Length: 435
Image 1 (cartoon, rainbow, N blue to C red):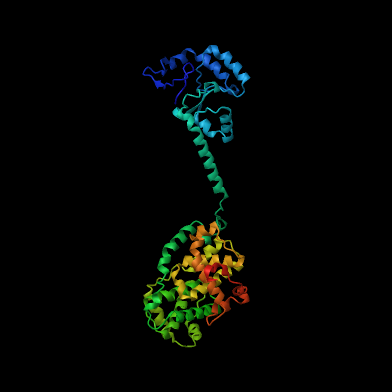
Image 2 (image 1 turned 120 degrees about the vertical axis):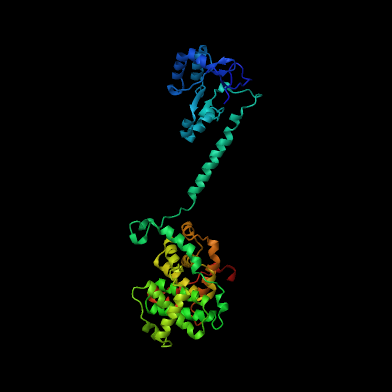
């Protein structure tokens, strides 16, 4: 902090704390001078701006100049005496007041020595040939920094807000409002366990991808005929793939694997479980009761009784909630992801990505343009670019769903029960160069 001497404007001398306890200013003891003029300084304080006394005021003019200062103040409304304010007062003042002060008095020091600022009179301005103190040169950059910070804050305000999708379930104990974020964080860590190698079919000697697709397409129809829960279908497909990854199966036993996987999924998810006799009847009595029970033991032992895994359905419910969708979009998303269950190529995508891509593709199909909100991106942890490859494949499946021999999903979603969802036009603009 530097204080210019009125009697010698070309020399700037630092202030030091003397050993005797007074504040030295040049060759004078400033503390002793205050002691002799204590009453006079108190009177001067009362004549400052708006008549308010300040606890720390420095006025280097002699007492004989008091009347001259008063006359100058009346003649010049913009005149301000030398004052010292605490930094806390400056920090709490409005920015508009700071700009007004700067316009009326451009020689404001931003020095923060001893937690205070000094306001210098207009008549105390240094001459043109005298270098400006560094504390005064920093005032402009600090003002520009404040302006830059204000622009950044305005940009943040303009961004799309992330919606709180769980506050509506705060009073619902079944929604586990307090733990839902931790649950889905755990699901993301576990989903790698539920994934299978996208090339596991290469180790099978008697079955191939086409046979797997026929089995899944048929099980989707069986699932619909028994009117089972969505969770049961996704868990059934997961159990089939994980079992085939570890066990070699001949083609005549492949249908048995599918039936047993659905039986285990029903026992895990359903309240009312189909009996073994019903499954045998559906298979046209191709297998006996003993064969079904033996395959059930083999599958459980092979999977080490691990049937509690996050499937795409778990993430679908969460992402549909984040997208704030209606019933039509929800049905379309399930239609697209069930088409993906049939195709072996989609095993390369993790369950969470499949679910996010299904919701994204359904939204684009209904509204006719690409859109992925900040809320969806936050809760899915996938950007729009990460979903485009999977979404493009889903559009391709949608276009071909009513053709060929594997039309089980298409016929299921062409009924009034599912609001004829399969008949809507596919979002071809998501295929990019494939158009």
